[in-house]
Image 1 (cartoon, rainbow, N blue to C red):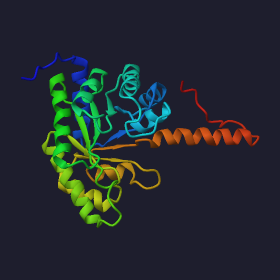
Image 2: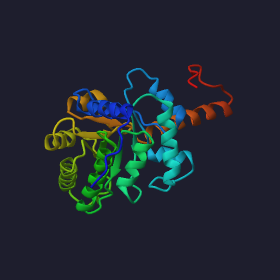
Image 3: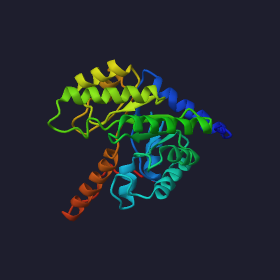
Image 4: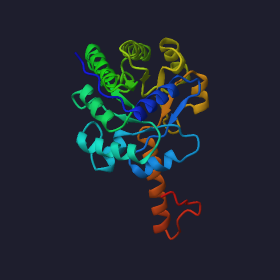
Length: 267
């Protein structure tokens, strides 16, 4: 028999708030963060209601490649620092679960997060569904409504030879299975075309789909909201925005110029 852990009221309240942000008709916008200062800057931005960490960006911060190359304890330590530095709900990119999705979710919840992304990496569907159930069980054991953003890599891992319609059908099949297993929302990276988003929302239901905003490619947030998307995040792209600004400033300096006049003291 599974033992229910004592509920931390503040965490349970944050989890409920975070869940409700996904079910509202107003789209949830998450600009992903990777360290304490990026989290504090985003959290202080008017209109920001929650934070999401980016595994790629955290790994890069410590010199690791993406894909669970960063040790889990180091990854969790940064997430824990972020949680302690802000008052908003925080969701963590769990990657593929580090070999034990349920246990990784338990450790993430212990660090103070109330949601997480979980990649299926196109494993057999029964295995992917079992991982979703394990994460949801971890949230139940902790006494919170853990907001699992169950990710399918059906689009980003598809062969170029596979007909697009077939790829989209597989993404929908997996997304529906994840929802049936208890995940509140489904994340499909690679989904950017209006017609495809409409097809997926029709299949999964409104406020069930989350997407990533890709620079120069994705639809504006307002249009995604009108299509019934629950949430849009930025993954590693916000870190790349920051690094682009840094490199551009460095280039301007070495070329004989100066730092941007509009620079603000945010830390």
